Structures are given as C-alpha cells and as structure tokens.
Image (tube, rainbow, N blue to C red; front, side):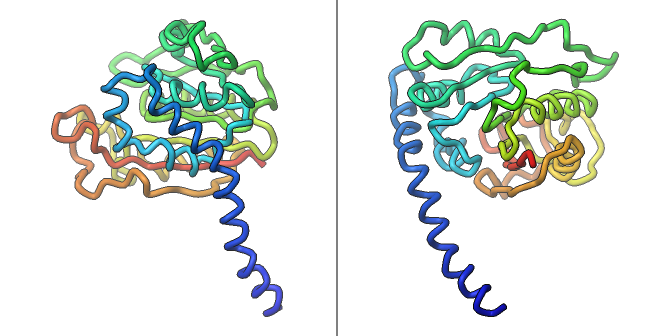
Length: 253
C-alpha cells in the first residue's frame, strides 16, 4: 500500500506539468486575443482584476473545445473566447446574447462563434422581485459541449430560474464536461436585502448545481478580495471592480 501511495505522489508533479503544457497553446491564444485591437481600452483595463488567463486555465479551457457561454453581457469574455476557439474549437453564446451576437457577426475572430436564440419572453419576474426566472428549456445541442461558462450572472435569477439553467447546461454537456460559475460573494446564509441582492452564497450555488446532477470539482481563490467587506451593493463606487467573487468548477459525470 505504501508503495502505491508513493508512486502516486511521484506522478502528481508529472500530471501537473502535463496539464500546464497542454494549456500553453491556449494561453498564447488568450494573450493574443487580449492584445488585439478589437478590444477597447475600458475592456483592457479590466484584465488585471478579472485575470482571464488564470481564470480560464482553472476552468479547464482548451482551444479545441466546444464552449457554451451564458449571458455574455457586453461580450467581455466572448471577445477572448471566440478568437481562442476559432481555429480548432467552437463557441456558442446564449441567453441575453443578442447584443453581443450582433456586435461580433461577420467580424474577424468569430468564424466559429454562433448564437443560440433565447426568446426574451422566456424571462418573467414576480412582482417586487429583482430576480428573473426562466421555464424549463433546452439549448438544442445535447451532449455536444465540453465546457459551459457563466460570469457574474447567477444572481440575476431566482432559485427556480437557476435550477432550470443548470439543468439545461447539464443536458448540453458531454459526459465529463465542465461547468464554470463565477459570481459575487455574500455571507453564508445571509438573507436578501437591498445591498446584497447581486451577491450569492457560494454554498447555496454549490448545492443547487449538484442538485442538477453535477459533481463539485474545485474552487479557486483567484478573485478573493479580503478588503471587500461583503456589506455593500456591488455597483457602489467603493466596491465595483474589487468585489470578492467565488470561482467554482463542476463536472458532468
């Protein structure tokens, strides 16, 4: 038994070094995308805070993957992912992706990027609630996705909405595929109020994603910010750009 353990320990550095080597080509493509003129100065200014190379390495991105990005917003990550995946992989964007899809359509770097339509009428909101829900749905690409990603979006949805999104992602992923979730931290078990509604309890998110069938793989402290007191709305001038965020990785068995 001791010899087996010793052998495993000896192999760990080899596995880690191989994983690093496998990411080198992808990292070079991320750097090229970061420095491309298609990105604005405002987008470049966020690189230091968002750490895209380190974050995407942790989330297991490789340049030959089929990736699904949810709620791309203004396309900050899309402008990195599309060019990285253009040659050997594929990028899908969906849910609130129309604005980004229009901006990148026909542009250099996005030949293998496409939008999966998601009708805005799917969104609904209970009276007095800031969070939306969506019904059960499918992306229509069952078992084709290697990696699904969502950055600072889960707080926009009710528990029911998050559950339906998680289950649709599970359906879209291949067996062994990964699901990366990043969002603003709040204190564990803290109730909603006007200052924290755009923050999420990471323990709650882990439980919800596991309930959809996923295995929890790992977390990263890349976006840990000890000077964020978790007290204020993330859009406040004293907090924005420096929120404490959880970075979680899950796997479809």
